[in-house]
Length: 141
View: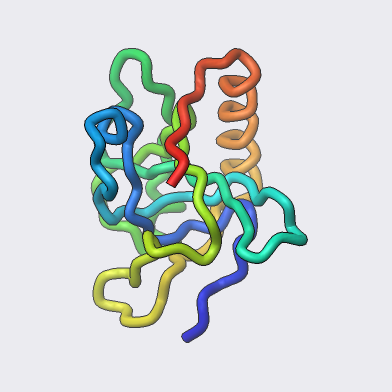
């Protein structure tokens, strides 16, 4: 199956590298669901994308997250544990990239689907606000 087009709101499986880990010179992170929040320079090939992590860990001090409603998690095929989209940090990477991974148990499938528009706009808006306030962190992959 070919890779999906990089579109905002797409939830992918990605080797996300946390900003705290990038500071320790790690080159890779942990495969997890992640959300494309923006595509940059649509004419470029490869294209740059901004990716937000999805985690089971409740946001801690200094981290901002939006909980994914259980019904949305089920529709995407995520597990039953509570999950959050972290909007206070992101990876910036090329598309396609070596961090893309197939969904466990679904060989050659790299995307879970799309966030519902309201949830996506909420995540994008919070991320954009933190970016404007210079409170969002990035790892350039």
